[in-house]
Length: 464
Image (cartoon, rainbow, N blue to C red; front, side, top):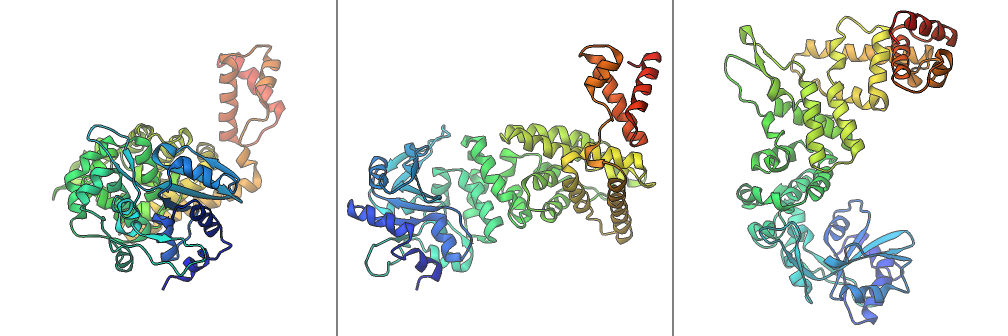
């Protein structure tokens, strides 16, 4: 018996069945496949629907040309045609078999005429099922040659063929394995993880962009910590984010310190499921291995690890081809995450203004990261740190009431500076604006008249 959600899909007036009727008129079958079918069965939310057919890409375009509002063909080389109807996106892909050669990042695609062969080349059994869409016919029978339905019930991830064959066909599937551990909460089938251990190095033939996209999906799962630990234990993390396994710092009986890797994974699980926050949590302590110093009486310190960590974060995220804004936001959060701990004597107006200015639009994310970073078992210390953060947030609220804290700027702009000093654009204007901003941070709001007086004094003193 098919779930009710699947039954709704089979209603004659549904877009899926309208499209299936077009394919049957042209002599081709149409199947709902992959993650779309899996999520329907599990009752999970889905965005787009994926279909498979024996029709070749040119035939697919001809079949839907009068029905679709638009088409996109970026994936046509690999057999996929995007069909857009009433704002919905349907991907229709020709039955295929794809493999990666040892020395290439691109798959070699061969089309097939059989759904069974197509399913045999898919990543995991839970994605290797197909539902035939039969217009006006009897209730369809699920095509499930690899036991995907049973594996859904058992919440286990297995490959249709041997994991060695599956991961040779597309090494990215090793990373996708842990993404499904994170997003579905499934366990890993016998022999699958051992294959990852043996084949992790093969991930090197996969493009940084594909790795980035798969990793990002893992990172915004409800609790990705367990999957991240799996990436480290399997050796897969070392292939594309070696800073993560490096956090498993060797400890000795004399110099005691927190398990940095375990702490990091706990922080990742604690912050909001926002990609920037999660990446910042993952990288916030990456500078510790390079800054660890041993002191007297068994103490361990990591001075300025946030500075080193921000630099390492920027380099790694750029290598993974993350957008520039993501790279900057994450590295800024890493750089700033220790700032609240430097104000142990209380928050002055000056300190709050500087903190808000430096955090900018990342303020809420930064506060969230700072709170999540408190994983100590010392309850007294934990209370002290949270009290300090509470005080900071209270001071921000208070200053916002008294000042235009979110629009922190001097009372005059660069044009006014040039007019008052009788100078043109150049370095002196930048120096003047920096001094005016520092005065605003240190002293609070002031008037344009006071700004002009300050400029005159700084010119007299040779600062401008």
